[in-house]
Image 1 (cartoon, rainbow, N blue to C red):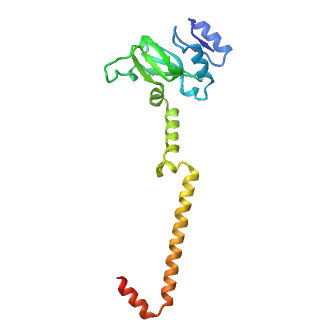
Image 2 (cartoon, helix red, strand yellow):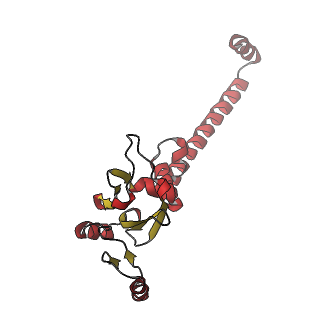
Length: 187
C-alpha cells in the first residue's frame, strides 16, 4: 500500500498490521498514478524508485523502491554538481518512471544512488558487466565459453606434442649421417 495523503503515526502503525508493505511520503513525493503502476509492474522494480521524502532533522532522504522497500541516504550523498547546482532537499520529486530523482534543479540518477548505497545492486551490476565482457577476464565467468577456450588450448597442445613426437620418431628412422647433417644445418 502507498500513502500520499497525510497520515499520522497511529494510522501508519495500524496500516502496517493490515498490509505487508506500506510506503508513505509527503505531498507530491510519489510518482504519478500511470508511472507508479508501470514501475510496480516492471520486472526491474527493485532498481527503480516510486517516491521519497527528505527529513531535515536527521539530514537524510528516504526513497521507496518499486518493491516497496525503503532506502535511506544522507544529504551529504548529494553534492553540488560541476556547474554549481546544489540540491534543494525540500523539492524532492521522482521522475522518468523511477529512474531519476530531482531536488529542485538538481538531478541524480537512481542507478548512481543505488550503486553508491546498495551493495547488492553493486554486486548485480558488476556480475552483469562481467557476463557481457568479451575479454578473457570477463569470459571466465561465462562457464561454457571458459570451458570451450580451455578445451581448444588442450587440444592444440595435444596436437603440438603429437607432431613433436612424430618428428622425433621420423628423425630416428633416418641414417645417422643424414641426421647429423640436418642437425648441423639447423644450428
